[in-house]
Image (cartoon, rainbow, N blue to C red; front, side, top):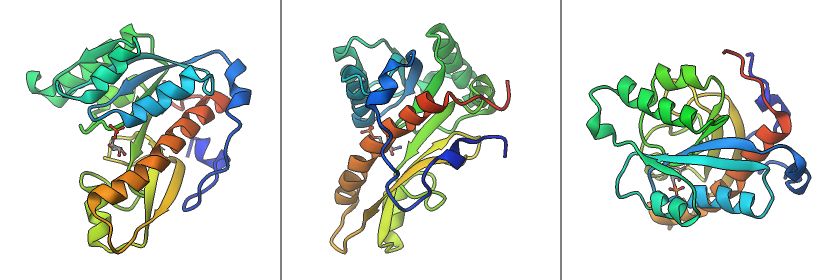
Length: 223
Ligand code: GRF
């Protein structure tokens, strides 16, 4: 495999070692494009880490596809540019993705961070940002990719679940894993209670993953 990030990262099922975030603040800022369409709690975790100088990064733009997504307001409150690109207005996934690529390029983005992006990506996005897109997913991949990850974990009565940050590849929720964090699953858990516990870890590992990108300055394997 040409991608080397996972080699430098603590493996699955344990919380990874904390990177010293403070040490990273002297690097030139990594220019991030956020793709999201949910409540935006992961976006807030990233934005707060940047505001507190824990991450030498800058959010260039937030792209969202759902007009009602609370993430948009949360970005606007922080004076971060937002773009609504509503997939319902595009004839194909490829044309939709091309519009996203155009906005990300206009914003001069180095890395794309998907936090609650619920659309399948096409080769158009992959080719535009080869090995420069990460995604967070609420399961310990490769278990339970796709939608209803938390419900699937409960249906299978797993005792440990968690979350994963990975490089985005064409297949849904596939690609080299950067960081995972585990959380216990309790018999009385509902999807909401398990999701709350997972999100606490999500907010930690998404920041850690971006810190790794800054530290490693990963080189894409394709241009
Ligand atoms: C997260 O749980 C993420 O794993 C999933 O969508 C959710 C987004 O949450 N892909 P938020 O909008 O960041 O609060």
